[in-house]
Image (cartoon, rainbow, N blue to C red):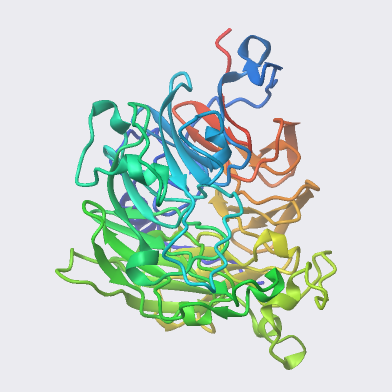
Amino acid sequence: MSGFSKVTLRTSLFAAAMMWPLNVQSADWPQWGGTQARNMVSTEVNLPTTLERGQRKGGTVDLTTTKNVRWVAKLGINAYGNPTVAAGKVFVGTDGRAVENDPRFNATHVGVEKCFDESDGSLLWQLVIPKRVHGLPDSHHFVMQRCGVCSSATVDGNRAYIVTGAADIVCLDVNGLADGNDGPFQDEGQYMAGYGKSPIKLTTQDADIVWRFDPVDQLGVCPHDAASCSVLIDGDILYTSTSNGVGGDKGSHWTKMHSYVVNPKAPAFIALDKNTGRLLAVEDAGISSRLWHAQWSSPSLGIVNGKKLVFLGGGDGYCYAFEALREIPKKPTKLKLVWTYDCNPPEYRFPNGEPVNYYKGDKRQKQSTNKNDGKYVGPSQVIATPVFHNNRVYIAIGQDPAHGRGRGMLHCIDATQSGNITKTACVCKYDGIERTIANAVVHDGLVYIPDLSGKLHCLDANTGERVWMVDTKGETWGSTLVADGKLFLGNQRYFYVFATGREPKLMNKVRLGSPIYSSPIAANGVLYVATGRRLWALAQDSN
């Protein structure tokens, strides 16, 4: 491997200045990845290394028996999106079971976005999302696997933006209905009840939807399995993937429900007006026509050669850079493609010199040769978010974790080029990693990234060589967080705290009661970890 090239201090400072977070308190964590670059590094200090999760009484954690736990809030059973913190509030998505005790709702509800008080974890409001029962073609495979809200809320001023578990994009008032119903959307009661149901009676603890955009009804998108994207806000413009994907014949076995892209002409990536939800632009790169599974990656943004670029991991295995819109267009337009980079080397796309069916690498299929040992070689899509750092994009390939393990690859891409840059922009690539859906994290000359099998990799950012690798032996979906000289990571078994640096040093590991599929974040002196069933707010005890 060749080393990661350096940039000048002047360029670094300029890029850092342009990547400042949204208009919020500097210690908040208002979006997925913390900033538009999506590099999960926090400046928070005095974060806890040790903790005791305490005893439970009637399903509630007794805080008097805990150590370094500020508060704990109940979720549902699944939490795949990550918390965000802004304006004194904590936002987190979960599945529909989180409202199972509310008589207004039933089992058809697929997700919930919850907003808690940052100081004590009390519930302020929630958005309950009903199952989509109309608007999809017969060939869809949007089966609602009870994933809930996989999107991390993006908070900008007094608005929060999410992609719901029903694949629509909504703008929410951060205060919910407690300060009245802001328009123009006024049908929250009907929305939360679901199609064909009687509207629910609203309370001040319900969400206030400002506007809603539905890619299914308005663009012909057919999402697959789940809706998964955390939106990017740049000025007045919102960017998001659509979760467009594959399907199959109605009533066929699930193994045949991946036979073709239902709507290959529907856009995989779009831009909206953040103030109104109006469609502004769509990608015209043909991503949907090449999708293997679905378009799930979240976008990032960076300043390259004085221009804002929006980066996207494609469901076709490519990484894309689009020129950010400079102004609000009067009518929908096309996003300008700046460059493409194939993240699958030829030996992955064409093992043994021949094309291979993408689903041959799915361990669940009888004809698959994947032994789920991490050695299978075949093509993968990009589910992780591209991370921008010092004119470079860091991105790794992977598949839906249900497909099993397989060979992956991490790329460091020179973002200053244009066109098809596959053969010219590879600064470094690392093939010692398995499939992953996690972001890379770049900090202090090192790159940290876990893979699906639970191996945590540390690379030298100047040489590209592996510095160390630790096997946590637990399936890992989320990304690491670097803060306070520590590396925080959760998997199906434990929550880990490592020391950052060139020597692998485990500082602590603890079970938090249920698997962790999300990524930890830090804001205002508190570390937040979402397990499947609870959101933990961890801080150093004052006594």
